[in-house]
Length: 283
Image 1 (cartoon, rainbow, N blue to C red):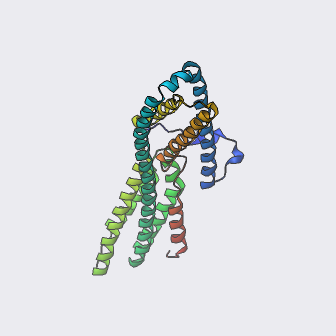
Image 2: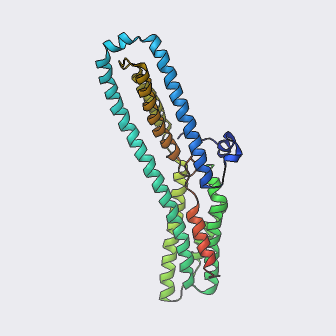
Image 3: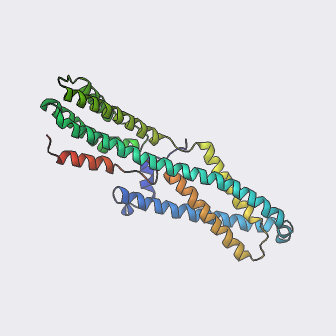
């Protein structure tokens, strides 16, 4: 896994006046880092081109331009396949993580609604636990997850949830059906939480990031060797290629960790579920 910077380090990088709350803060942060990284990448690429012009004269580049173009084409295609696959992977991972959070929040809300059919005492207990679980995820679980940690409070409430359902003694066929549904929903809730925490910790392996960065560096260097007489046009082509490459790699990095990366999945699903449960007036 790729080492992650502490959450507080991002906020210290730019003036506080730029920061809002929640998703707005993330958007500003993402744009600023994107501009900085792309700009720095282009500057380094052009510095490298200036150095290459001194050590590899144009006559030599023009003499071997056919062979260079063939090699560059092969490298470009091979590297493009790797980048394309990883871009698809992180986008799919991000979408899956978002759906996992929504499913978990939905399970909590379903249990809250299902509790309406239980006897009064058990109804109050289950609905109270459902609201407490959603509140704990929003207030404690989500911030800790952004640091790669799990919430003991959420784990404890989950255990209480399970025990509350298992301790229920049904007396009628209807209560038996409710009991079975509640057991299924609690199992779904546990599974959803486990998947969410797993997705929060997993990212692209470090060895693949080495391949991405070194591969990108090699393809940029190969653009220096193309036999283009107009130096201004050559520099523009190098800059354009570097901008696209840096943007793609930055997008992959931004989506790599869905819950604590530059583009974070918010706790909106749990906040909305909590709001609906509290306003239902069941208790």
